[in-house]
Amino acid sequence: MNPRRAAYTQARTITLDDARLLPPGPGQVRIDVAYTGICGTDLHIFHGDMDARVSTPAVLGHEMSGRIAAIGEGVEGHAVGEPVTVMPLAWCGTCPACRSGHTHICHNLVFLGIDAPGSMQTSWTVPASTLVTLPDNLPLEHAALVEPTAVAIHDVARAGLESGEHALVVGGGPIGVLIGLVARREGARVLMVEPDPHRRAVAEDLELTVLDPGEADVTEEVTRWSGGAGAAVAFEVSGAAAGVTTAVDALATRGRLVQVAIHPRPREVNLHRFFWRELTLIGARLYERADFEAAARLLADGEIPAASLISRTEPLEHAADAFTALESATGIMKVLIDCGSAR
Image 1 (cartoon, rainbow, N blue to C red):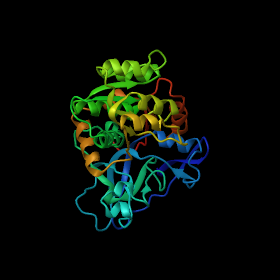
Image 2 (spheres, helix red, strand yellow):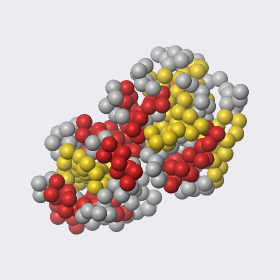
Image 3 (cartoon, rainbow, N blue to C red):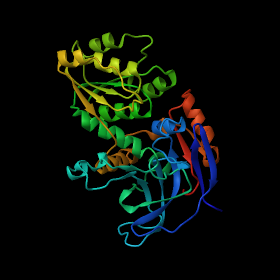
């Protein structure tokens, strides 16, 4: 059976076709892909919002799990059959960010699944340096959530969150819920804001406290919840202009706003409130290897309940339908593509 791939060809179009199965080159490995998750960035590409960056046909996908199928020359420390995920970053090593030790925000970063072919295919060849070995007790389906969990771990670390602090999470999608779970694990008191009833229900099932912004004055509720001070940290995960306003208004004096969501256009921000309360804005982008390794451990130990976040799994042949379903966001949290290559 020929390897298959799902590729983005133009706005709102995903096609399925055959792919060539090539041996990995020096320093590379070929992975039999088990599962690939669809994320918000993939949806942006699907909508045509990133056509200036993406070359078509583009194989999307970077939240994945699988097993090593073949190893190229010079690769050591890995074996065929080993369960792995991929930290989908390739940096230049020479730019100012890399020289400062911040390779994950390299000025010339190549993101696998956006700038280079991704994992939404039965077989994927990647640099061996991107591999993260998975614990043997972590199901491959759950391991597809390592990448978004690593995002949450990095975001919470960027916040400098301390035990006992009040943390507001604006946006209860997969990343928002994962941030809430990681923040709670760090000892924070977590409150989430999410308008979608299904996503609120998922978060509540995980014992997170969630507000419906359509029925509550968030600033008043946060003030009451925090004993009058406001939130020490607000994570803006909604990607909406209203979410930015909500997060800023809810912050305590010298509070920290952690910007997680990707906003496709500039937003108005109340800079007077930043001045008046001496607020801090923190950018949080991607992750580092330590975040990936910690994410794999948390999922393997069951501290991140992956099964509760996976709404549905579709075969690779139905990838286009999976994008459409996730786009509706009705009754959906995380959608996985079963790439069918490894179990």
